[in-house]
Length: 224
Image 1 (cartoon, rainbow, N blue to C red):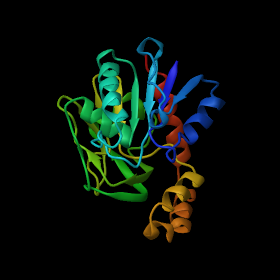
Image 2: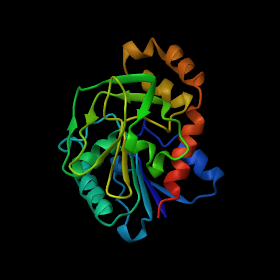
Image 3: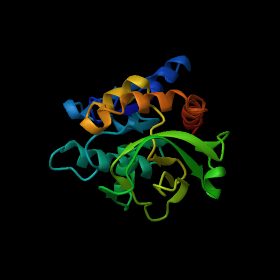
């Protein structure tokens, strides 16, 4: 079964579960921030790990992160399809010999991302334009772990997506957001609270966002 890890009560799966319901795909959501155990590896056919306001290195403040990174490492070793979004991508990097860096390449809002030459051939991005619209909300960023392939980048953040092994992906951008999620995140900080209408409108007017989000999920679900 597809399992989803939600690391933060305010960073839900958004359109991922909406699309999974449309596609009639079964899934189970775990909430380790409130004490939920991680899934049994034997039950996981694919795994999505969402973002969160914490950093990938905040193990002392959020002890479940250390266990989660170990779990992600085992997922990669077993070649179980993995998709890590924002924090989920940073955790994948950290679990595989890379690192997450705080306060680097910050982006907030609706921005374009470009596929690399390798990204254009990658199964996760099959059918997606070479330049596509994303929503960004991050203060930290991941390094590309040893042996991994850089799949996408942008002028402000050159590490937007990578793959390690055959079926583990990390993205810095958020394909899952909805208007309510964006407005909720804006409320976290007085500076972004003032821009809530602007940021929500930019996202609403973005061409191709919903199609890209749906395609990424559909491509991921096809992974063996």
